[in-house]
Amino acid sequence: MIAVLKPQTSDKQIENLSSWLKAQGLDVHISKGSTHTVIGLVGDTSKIDEDLLIGLDMVETVKRISEPFKSANRKFHPDDSVISVGNTSVGGKDFTLIAGPCSVENEEQVMEIATAVKAAGATMLRGGAFKPRTSPYDFQGLKADGIEMLIKAKKVTGLPIVTEIMNANHLSLFDEVDVIQVGARNMQNFELLKELGRTNKPILLKRGLANTLKELLMSAEYIMAGGNENIILCERGIRTFETYTRNTLDVSAIPMLRELSHLPVIVDPSHATGNAKLVKPMAMAAVAAGAHGLMIEVHNDPAHALCDGPQSLTPAAFAEVAMSVRKILAAMEE
Picture 1: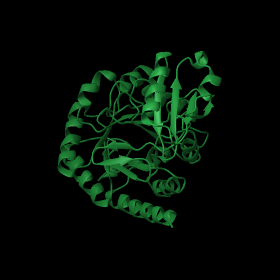
Picture 2: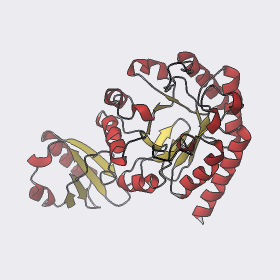
Picture 3: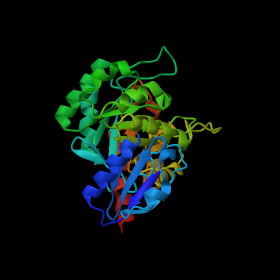
Picture 4: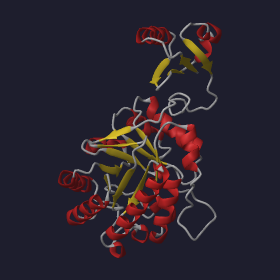
């Protein structure tokens, strides 16, 4: 349930109404927009007399939300959420470029790539330290050592770092990580999501390869229910019957998620296609569709990458993509 308050409602009135609603055993979320304040109620709202609530002088309208995701719902939070990450932010009018290797392989590799992507316009550095691989015999990542290498690259370049978590027991290793990524395979690892809900770190939540948008938003709801509202949604392609690409990028998910939710939406065209040649056109399509950012895999030697070389761009190719993205953004502002 949400209550939309009249524009002239004072802070004291909002505080009194909020206190009364909390006394009814409900969680109260207050969202102050440019013209109206929205109070979102989570819990057993059946005990609330809707007629009594709408009869209050300060209340303009009362609506019940039919969707199971509440905190992630745009009805709860009409304005776009903007997630602060180090010296940058994700969402709103900001555009985010996250780039880096699929896997951290060694310190020299990370430093070289971090320096190159920053020069091309990247605002965050991604890199895999813990790697979920289909085969147990494939490279599993450098784990804690990989995170340390990312932290060193952060100190040198100033780029906030993004890396994937596999197990809640590893959380202590992520103290200096700026954004914790939940990969597609863990999108519905609800125990992990609950633990991340108890942190205050930004979470980059990837859509599962066979999950609906509703399921993605319900996973975000798990994190938000724990108190952490710093969530970035990521569309990374879904599995279809097509065999020429690794996955199928669901471009329609971008405007749909923006309609359903206030959370920022970014796109990973690297995993969506699995083909470096397709990254640029898919990145451009994502920007045109309204994505708040991109996450792109970049490697200084893709042919010898320990993970996902075929979908990784060279630093030079990434610079071309970044330039094309800026042109599209400029054209959309005209």
